[in-house]
Image (cartoon, rainbow, N blue to C red; front, side, top):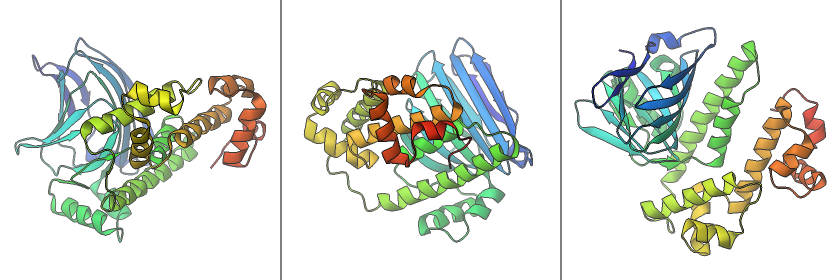
Length: 332
């Protein structure tokens, strides 16, 4: 059964995805984009299908919490990245549900039964990579113990998650998602690029969950602590042209400076301002490659005091000047 989205009030349809698992085996890259405009949900959805893989990105605004329910039974393995808004993923008929908060990710397999997802907050942004069984089994042969155990569940058709606990999307994963959403390659190179990024994303997810067994949250112990750190990160990147000081950011997030520094490192594996610097440079790199903005425009958009200051920071990170990169057609 294809994926269906229905209004929870009157059960009226708002979206249908006609694809099933077999349709993912496309030799050609299939790309589709659709706008949704209904009383219960508005926004944009995009999907890409190729070589047993489906990638999708949705950015939706619902009329209320639990406004729409998504259901389907496409027999695929789903790498889910919850970029904005809390959701609940569930296996129909079993009572099994799995909440995923903003900024979290995991890998899910529902077997051939019906699965579903409900929005808990009005704004919901999701990025997903799905593999059909054949593609996933091929890619995960002789990998880590955790991934092999998950692979066994897939082979047996059992509902499973890669981990009982979600992890937070770190900068490396976010950067991979951004590179896919802003990819400028065309034709066969575009498909090759997407394939390489999907495999890299699977590797990073597996590695992160392997390391998670050793990680202990000594600072961010509660859901509230984690929400405050995520709020601080979002505020920082939204105000990167004029970022607050560490103490000011702590006050804005409602925590003390020590907890901000330690908690940020626990969740994102980086200091606050190293994260900001890397985020700025990734934006600059993409804009330069796409030739969307000049070096002077980027300098002030990203909050640098001068083009010289920006160029120095850029070269320190990528070992190439912004001007030299702007003349290139790719940067791998």
